[in-house]
Image (cartoon, rainbow over the protein chains, first blue to last red):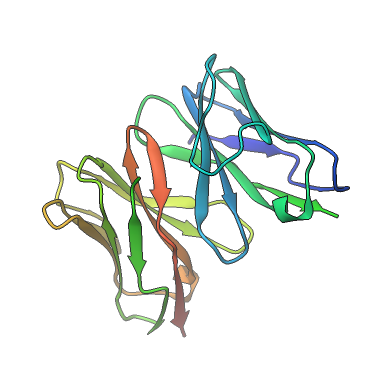
Length: 114
Length: 110
């Protein structure tokens, strides 16, 4: 089956620093990747949709200057949380989709901002 | 935007009983309806999905029904087992963008 990886699996950083999270599709080419945020005991909230080679489309309420998304290739998308603050602490999950409907999720990255 | 409502938020059943989780959505142009199972601290796992041109789909103990007119779809799990305990999310997709329901915490008591 399709495999999506994320790196790192967890990260702790100081307030004000930036953190980059990578999402890779390992055995297929992802035309579209999605980034979600999930707070404890809550649902997944779609943050943005990224297509390879074009700018990401952000959901309403998500600051594009704070959550920088780059989708440089068909197998890699990155999310950079800039000037992170404690309220950004969350579980960030990416998913990747090829040509069909199915999305394959990465294992998630737990971000803790001190 | 799309509004997805999921009920119930928690569900407790005895092993062997059936469990039903329901979702409604607002955008009639939505065309893909997956269901995910998420265990604590892990990624969501697709368990079954249905497209808008199909009314029902079954995979062993799991089935999904879709009523496009009423804009609701349901997950049915029969002969539940303790390992079915998890959080289940319905989702609705249009043009590839997926919106998730709030989730249902299913507990199967042995």
